[in-house]
Length: 82
Image (cartoon, rainbow, N blue to C red; front, side, top):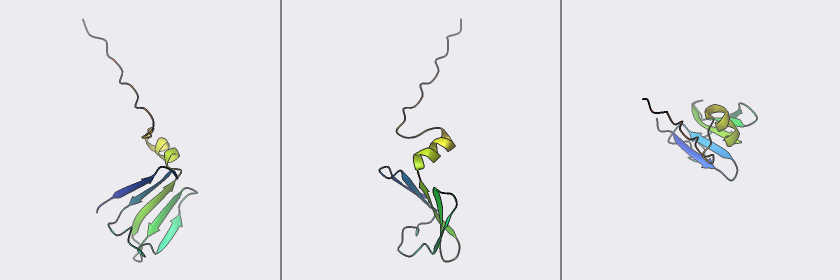
């Protein structure tokens, strides 16, 4: 399975394609709204082909504690042992 991620920073949206055909016209037969911001896309065989995430930055912070536009934390310096 090839997973592709497309990000639209302007609209704060992320699409995770779980199938090589997820972007093909007519591939998505039905969509289910899992939450206000997350939609699951299924093909005609009821196979999950993609996940659409709106307000992606909010959800990425909740999951990972990190967003690409945020500066990484500085590593802690260890004191040298004597």
